[in-house]
Length: 245
Image 1 (cartoon, rainbow, N blue to C red):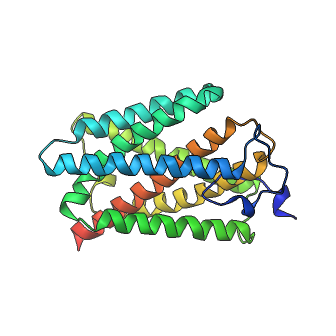
Image 2: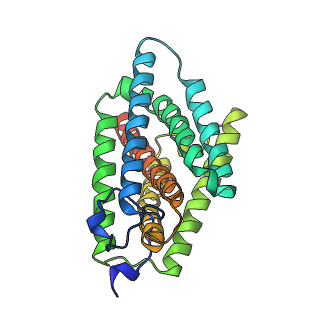
Image 3: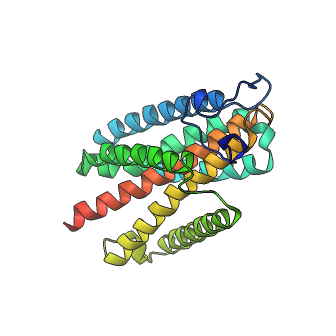
């Protein structure tokens, strides 16, 4: 089967990967997603670096982390039901994620300065490995695989939501510690996040050069959400190993 007839949703690739000469300024293109994603990543990186600097000067990061998390969740819900608003909601999502990521990773940056950069490296390598596996059809995105990835993703998010609620009541769930159970859960979440990239690839391949232009923002949103999730899981896992060993 030709890759052109395949399905996907992930964009840090140049047009020559999948574009087939039928691109239109009025439809979603891989190139458009690529540039929007790169811009989003740069904005997130700038906000994160600025918050790290503030944290080193003594400013607490709790409200940045909490505000960024809640903001990104609310914006994601609105995007899901109002996709044609994505062109101005996704930039707001990027800002919220930058605040969350800066606050979340400030502890690691302060106590283990090299870990965030190592986590970024692992995330980039994982992205290209999954892209290669997808391109070579070593892993084929079937309906059954989609169902498994989506079910696993939802299950993990539910666990995180419940653990967050328990935290509010002073109950610390095992997944936040450095026990072998917590590490195993972290590894599982990182694997699922890696496979979730395949759904992004599938979305892009299915709608490129066909869907309305605003769908580029939807694809960018999905890709950034997956990459940030993967980065967070990798960083948490590396922190646990650093603390434990």
